Image (cartoon, rainbow, N blue to C red; front, top):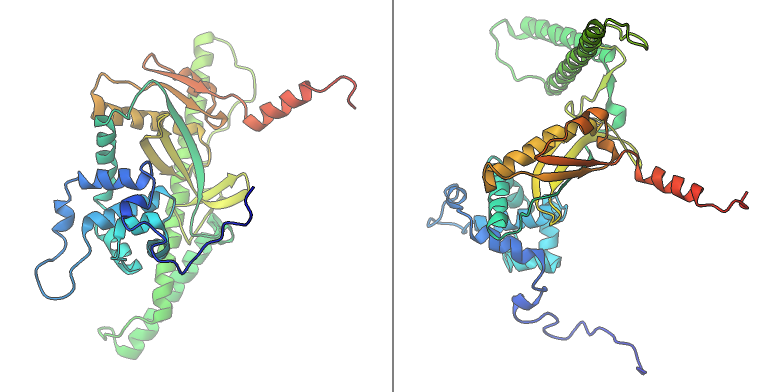
Amino acid sequence: MARDFRRPERRQGFLLPPDMQDWLPQDDIVHLVLDAVSLMDLSKYEAKHRVGGVGQAPFAPSMLLTLLIYAYSHGVKSSRAIERLCRRDAGYRYIVCEHVPDHTVIARFRRRHIDRLPAVFATVLRMCRDAGLIRLGLVVLDGTKVKANASLDANRSAATIDEQVTRMLAEAESVDQREDRQFGPEGREGLPRALSRREERLARLRACKAKLESQAEVAAARQQAKIDARAAEEQSSKKRRRGRKPKPAAGSVDPERVANPTDPDSGIMKTRRGWVQGYNAQAVVTPQQIILATEVTTEANDVQQLQPMLTKAQAMVELLLGEDEVLGAAAADAGYWSEENAASQTEECELFIATRQDRRQRADTKSHGRSPMCP
């Protein structure tokens, strides 16, 4: 039996091994990311930076790209948080060594190469293919709600948006007329700061209105499709179908329907912890956790995402492995269940979709498993 506790000696030299290779276990994901980036052609990234001149040398694009991939794989999106971790986390320190980039450098690198970053995704998949990590036969589809940088309270109804747009336009016209009288019709004067902010907000409100109008058009098209399908069925069977006949779509925006001026693209999403203003992020992965397809949508329900996501994953598989390769099978939770989705199964992709939520199944199992003597 030990006689004392094992206590840390923080003033001891070389608390970490002298060789950085020994800082982390060999199966840490940082080694995979470093190896993957080292095999990429980064000439287009490097062409954006000047070298050989005066001043401080820029950070290597390979290091910054590795840093972003490693951080995002751990769910760290903030450039300031990444800078902080570069000073205190062994994995991040292993990537940057003594060259810790400022958060502004990280953010600028991401913005400068934002159009090229999606291609990195396909490159990593090709490397996984060549390494034999992509084995088909089963893929898994799921989605999660991601909170937007917008408040639920910021949502405005269609009627409110129309009112605010009208008021802002009238206010802008009033300011223009007043400045014409003050500076003359051709007079030049900087736009008032307050009005500039209003114009930005007006642009967001218009985006909200366009979104609501687009949603109304989609809803009207879906409703009309239901009416046409019912009519065709009744005509072919010569019998009137039971149930309430669907009403024709109004074709106009519901005044009570809402959109968010802070982030017009976002929507109201229900999560296990309540309602959030955000997006529905989808992913198709293999059992080996290789991501084949991703998408972000404002559709709160997962039902409409099954076929688009599997189609996108199949396209990626054909691109990487050849046109003869197929997914084989796909598994999804109860959020994707519908009779239409179940009927969409093909010989190339067998579907396994849960018909009930897991917590309800467990509750039923527990209730059926009770002893008859229990109250």
